[in-house]
Image (tube, rainbow, N blue to C red; front, top):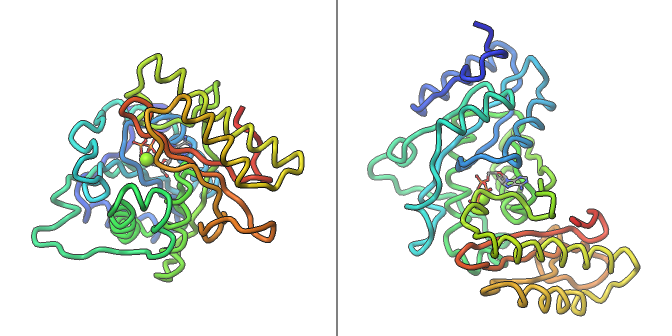
Length: 297
Ligand SMILES: Nc1ncnc2c1ncn2[C@@H]1O[C@H](COP(=O)(O)OP(=O)(O)OP(=O)(O)O)[C@@H](O)[C@H]1O
Ligand SMILES: [Mg+2]
């Protein structure tokens, strides 16, 4: 059967050692490997990462995606137990996006009995989401390290929606001298500009309408910047006012140095406007690099 015409033909591997052996064989056969780590409940954002991976390794390469709801990146009061899990639907989507291998391990296999090892990135994880989700990035860098060790990818793809995560993984990869090219893929959005996220499904119709203000507020900031405004504090305050009007609560709305994530100081630094707000009980994040990205809407 031709795997490219049979949508259910995607190869699913559950055992970490089997996944590792499969990708070692691929590399020995000369295939370049692209890898996309996810928590499943896949959407067009994830599939865009997979397609970008395919573009980078070519038709002869291998595209692998992991689907693993990683417990160590959830806080004690977060949504680990109710996080959407829908593997069979995800597999159909992976096949449609030309993914070759899906790695879907269970928790015990990724965290062996007695495990006591964590990978930590320091300064970049301190601000923004680091303040509101203690331990989150340590969970992310730990699981991504394990997944890189198993998959040995040439290129790994991350979404810029999770801007801080992308920069943290990039830093970790450089610091650990890993031979992996980390690619940040631009945020995929709905028609109204809302960044796609697996957690968007928690939104009611009313909340979804309110959430549409997020890309509009980011768009306002982009246009101000494009028209020459550099008063980051004033732009931030206006975005703050707009988002407080629709949000149930605000975690942060900040303009930061786009490279170091330290406070934005002056025009010698690239600026990222990053936000995290709750609409109802759903926590939404978004960002835009001012002067580089176009307005989401
Ligand atoms: N809208 C998007 N555009 C581009 N990449 C995305 C988008 N949403 C998620 N990604 C990327 O997909 C990868 C896997 O993310 P994840 O599985 O956590 O999905 P998610 O939609 O962010 O879910 P959640 O909102 O529950 O965190 C990450 O690199 C993430 O940045
Ligand atoms: Mg996510």
